[in-house]
Length: 561
Ligand SMILES: O=C(O)c1cc(C(=O)O)c2c(n1)C(=O)C(=O)c1cc(C(=O)O)[nH]c1-2
Ligand SMILES: [Ca+2]
Image (cartoon, rainbow, N blue to C red):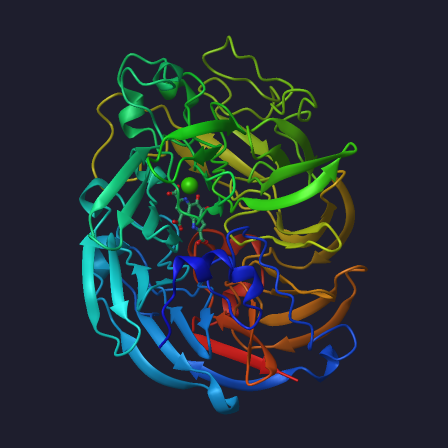
């Protein structure tokens, strides 16, 4: 197999046939210039081949695993993961797929599965040199030889004894694998860690919650060290700007999720965008989206890097579609705020975002506990609320896609409200490997979805394709099309400009993974994993009538003209 050099990883946008990074390239646009499958030809798209994978065994609190991965493709070979972290190498030549090897990391199902808040999830692998680099739910970073599927080395990065698991794909930057952690619902103290792929040693680990004496720690104003169990997970893969030499990564919810009085203050850097120096892990700037969050609005979404004009000036921008229902554009050189737009139809937790500061209008930095909309803000006195978007967010982990020619950003939306209860938390309540949430959702309300298009240069919504079910799988953009899968099984293509549906196929499973595209032997293909898992069918099924009949499964579908 081929060497994946840093030079090639930097140039991934131009390797048109390939998909070398989790989000295809360092911009995380999930845009491929391949255009054989286009507005005119797409009606001829049909199944080329399928392959049954594994990973749907149960473990811990989970009755089965799910499929959330984005495949990597390099020069006619695919590397794809299942929910328990097995990696499959598939030869794509000759018009069908054949399994070359499978690496089973022997994940400890019960130990890790007991503390995976939201599913047996593994969102994919990365490639570097002659190895595939992947994570396991039980906290390991594994390097597997591309050639023979043998494990070259592995290193423990996260510790399930503390409630830490890993569900995201690694990001490779300058011969390092960058790892994010999950566990904010178990009161972990979140971090982002860099492993040197040459020495296999840790180079840096940056806690998303600053320690005593570090700038930001003063935003934890309680008297019982709430910062030590303050959440701030980092479970979605970030992006990288080589010119600015900055990594962009999102940070998850504070813990306990629903008891703001326990963790008074803004709770930095939870629910923030971080820009980090890749050499040292130092935080160069931050922007917090929902300070002192009462709603579980993890700001973990991928950070999409786009170069666009804004108010007549060329800007280097980072986009984020936050769980709080707003899409944000920040200047990625310094984090200054450009615009925010609601991408869901209904937002009730705030009256809006202050156009100068980018903070919720009600935000008062002098307050230890924030009150956003007084009706909707959950606290010990207002211990039962209805909020929109619901705690799953207006958009969860499934990635957005961006078309750089149209300067249009497509968001996979969850259109929801839900009812939340507060439960007062006391110092001493935290126990390793136990939920530490300070309340939670109670009544399940119906949930739908949409694909919402935003003009990145203005922040205005330009279109909405409404869907019966929430968008749980993420998007792919090509020059003329947007691809998406549905939890009820359909994979479909929309016209990139009109958002009209131009093609559809029912996979017979439930789609919970993002589509991707590649080319081999001159032919373009669309690939997607099928198998409903993640958080949905355990926690949210009452809100989506009809999905209870979708069987778990584990299937790779590949389409061609
Ligand atoms: O805070 C965390 O550490 C964390 C991790 C994860 C995860 O790793 O899957 C999810 C969440 N939170 C979460 O809040 C959530 O809604 C969620 C949905 C899913 C999924 O895969 O469907 N994962 C997660
Ligand atoms: Ca969370």
